[in-house]
Image 1 (tube, rainbow, N blue to C red):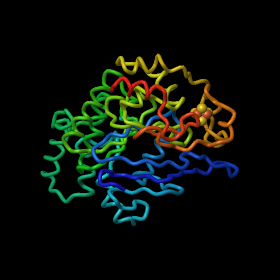
Image 2: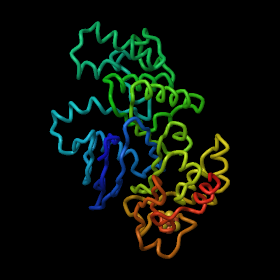
Image 3: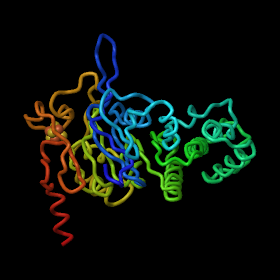
Length: 337
Ligand code: SF4
């Protein structure tokens, strides 16, 4: 694991038992790392395993197999006490700002809760810290005395963010943090997260079902399909030169806020047909072959490995072998010379 990597996940698998001895293969052999100070956007339809990865990373659920290291420490080997100490460095922002805040607790108690558990502060020190956190997320300090129902969705998510940064963590899993919010409010929350990231050097795993939401916050983007990571690349690259037909389909389905994305959409010929198959019984070979318009006979039998197609750009598709640039990438690089 390099110095720049905060988190490394190797061959992570999480299977859930289902009825009659069946198994839901929620995450099936996923490998990637998250660098210090970056935002890794993790994208895919519901049921693709992205939220399960976020929860495994924080050990809110235990993986079936694989390895996770955090700051060069084997996260899965930690005992309870060590895990508790490390947990303060890893926090989560939940999708639903309505259900993630206890309606019977005042905002001050909600934000101060992690401080009560992990730090020995006097009441006044805790109050001061809560006031400071409220200000940091753009809310008035006296909101500490109010209840969650008195706030809008965006304000509640700001409260959730204040709680997440209370212990000055290094890493935050943001699990669809803006999906439940109005579009007009989404950008404000994303901007707030970016400001806090540059202020405190935070590292984010930003989980989203759509590519448009993560475009401006992500350093790199990973795309998941049915428990597998199918593409991983720097954000600018994935929006301008998506290699995997599934990424192309997601991009075609996203609104295009800027000309680059609009160009990529125009280029994308792929449209997603039907629902994703169930992770209870994923298709053989490439799991995307049942919906992929580019599928060839081999796709039914051969499972494509995730390979580095061009520097930093990984894809799992038989049409893109390792080290062979796609025609689009070749055209772009020759234009740059
Ligand atoms: Fe489509 Fe085949 Fe590539 Fe899978 S391996 S994405 S089915 S072309």
